[in-house]
Length: 239
Image (cartoon, rainbow, N blue to C red):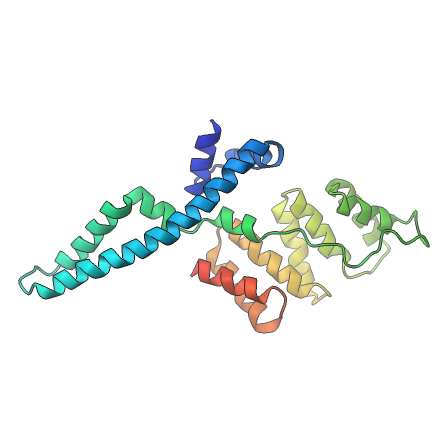
């Protein structure tokens, strides 16, 4: 499958898991492919906005004409609207532009959470396991970070360890392990409960579970200030 076909399937929300893996690898390693992706993503957003306005205007015009004609059959209005949509965008185009692109929503909103709990430059415990864990985390050596966090978990009770271990799993695209750790963070009402709720919402979006994503986002907005504006914007995209 060539790059154009990968982009086509991405923007039509039809990548298989194997294709998604190839797609992500190309984004990380192929600068030309990434530039093409960014251009296409911007173009898709512009087209969606433009076509939405055109569609609304056209449907309003169709409805006005229908209302003026009293001798139309009962279902003429619905048929005319359906026809206008088909003509304007084509059925495939309609599904492409107006269906929710979960992969895009996830990627547009996901950022790795920064290390805010441990200063790796401090010298009092330069050789500690915790320092090694966060050095690995900040350098995106996620497997080593996970191993170090797990070594700490055996004899430490710091409530942020699971949160950062979950972040490392996300960095490795191990969604299920990350989700379980974030759920523990929320259940125990630990220090990063708001942040964990946000990432659980993003995971639900990645898994195309709209109702669960909405539930997490609404809970986040109702109870915390963290990423409240982003949560509100995401809810608009999902509804």
